[in-house]
Length: 565
Image (cartoon, rainbow, N blue to C red; front, side):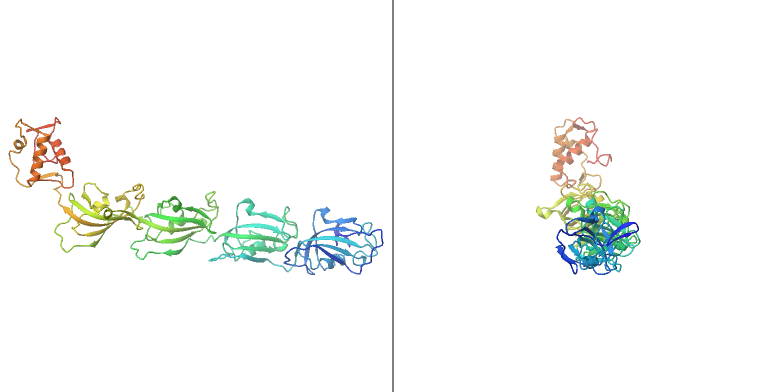
């Protein structure tokens, strides 16, 4: 029946049809015609439930006497507690959300012989077209239904955790009232400390990253009697379709997992080391945001010095060359509440899968490891010696750079003449013919920050496996030519073949070449002979006129300023 409650028309029943010209057929009970049934009925109305529904009330002739649609709000009431006319109390039982029914109610189950004022005449049969939108019970709590679980769940949401999630929020009939997806931004919040409505605070507990679940809550755990004043009506059940993307706690530190450590690890990184590593960076839900592999270049940095985010600074300490590990970094040790903009959202947990390529310290020297030492070793290499050796050159991760074996010939240098990187010079001193060594050369003694384009990356540690094949003893430091025998007192005269008191370049060259071929003198090994002789002549030709006079001519013993005779 129609009642006035607190000054408002309180409609107990919802749709009706009035009498036709012909006398209506008497009804003994209500008649229910289901005009629409949803495919799924998760819950049917029971006595004691609270329902929200729309209706049109009409007489059998189709004349409308009342409608919730006209008022722009649903009719909300407990079922089976005599808050409705008896026929409507019966008609609503068993209904599903989104079900539509045409209910015909006889007078004895409606307003009877009294009718209702001028609106409903006595003995009226009433027709109600009813659409059920919501149903809940005062005993209801939060209902959670997980419909997708990740393969691995190493951690679940607990009270005081901070999470990032996407959601679609609907009423029980499916009406969308809000969505984080449409804003293209996650909802970020603490859980269990009152930052959310009570039902969501409860429904999110126990979720795994990557899990999807439906969280359904009664209005007492949602927005209550008044709704949110906008899109959520009062006394509305709420349904949230949630996917959890991220999870951390402010007390979290970094975590290191999936470690793959090489069998041999003679050294681990410490603060102040310079590290070269590859990485794949993703969010906790697997969303990729960056990779050094895609740039085909390692990320190179000092560790423990604040050059990288705090979590990575910590995660790179104690690693071995060749090691792989997963470093999970909470946002307060990553990019914080602001993120980086387009790629890394605010308050995001970061996951880095890294592989250590190499590391060194600026204080490092060349590391020398003797792998083979011959039984006999009469002479050891020194500065100025001409050496021939084979090598295999690699990076610390084993990547091949170069090998003399590929060319079928040795590499030949003069030690101390800056013909190779400083680390190689250091590593080949005091070496025996036949000896084999492994040299580990830091970049500041190798190819430095720039490396060698297309061959050696910048700041790369180099590894050389070398074998000394042959050695020719060099001259004393500062000499490019020495006499094996006593020097003739008539040296200038012997050079001056045409006896014109001048030694020309050709005469000088012929004479020195002859002395070397006869074993009377030695040129410094490893250099172009004519270049040495040309340099010797230039040093003696003090006025630069292209000839040497007897006054200009001096031996090494006579003058230490020139590297010649």
